[in-house]
Image (cartoon, rainbow, N blue to C red):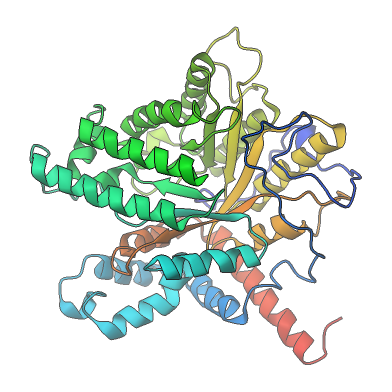
Length: 473
């Protein structure tokens, strides 16, 4: 979800297709997943009730959330404070004493849960998670992308992949946690799958690009069936390149299994990282496989979250190149037309096959360009692909809120209902420490982006202060 390395603003402008145009619509605008042609009868229709535009996109946030966000974002946007924070989180994620173990130190557990945990995580149990989901929907969001915190990190495995009993126990633990997550989700929500969470044997197989064992296959299919029955979607997280090619092979296998059961829409999505030079080629290959095998490809596009650990030659040399890759892939997906960035794997292909898309980014400019394109398509009565936007809970909340309520600096005369989701992880405070550590590390490469969020929260607090004392205007 990172917005890329914060170097300098993008100077290159995309084609005019991405420039905002004024359009007129009726009061009850169509959902952003609607198309000019009648939707398939089994497609989930996302609609968010029209509400009056608030005086500020962040006006509906509780004061406690604004204050907590301002505190945490102030630390995250300060290079001086962020590094000690990362050191502290690393110590808490790998405790050596009971004093630094959040599961054994009640005072530490309370402090972490009320601050950074609450900022980014959904809860430790079903009751807490569903309360969080309800709160998010009250803010106007369509729903959540919910993930289970359990994971096995590359390089941290000490268990032999040949230990079949231990491997089965790890897979069963993953399965139970994942089924719990599906149960917590509501219809239309997304459930994130971290395949390395299946344990050390799964990690070994993914590193070697080998297929899952029969036991793993049964667990994944059971998860797919549960999600389809619930009306939820599945997202396979992208991970480090040491395991990502294996993850892509597994994802395509189960996309065919899931998405073939839900014609005209995707139930399972893969994640593509735009900062990788190989992403356009990889995505084109997957689009061709989906076209050939007759199902809708699910595409979640992010900028990338492993900049600190990936081999540098695999990544675009500059932020501008990453931004161009991201924005031009979005344009190709939304228009279903190949372009200079996303070229067809089969030269005879004239347009992209059916896709369902999640634009998962904290980059305001990319979101605005995509939204402007959607408005153009709506004004022309053009068919539109199924689309959702997503940002991490606790990060880029101002971007999410603007999507829900409309961009203040947009020249468009209409507001299109948008399907905006917040990405959350659930699990015990201890289980979520690895996730929280990665968020902090990710912010070292996005300080400028985080600074914008911090300034937005500071501006919202100032607005409320002035209003309370009659100084607004």
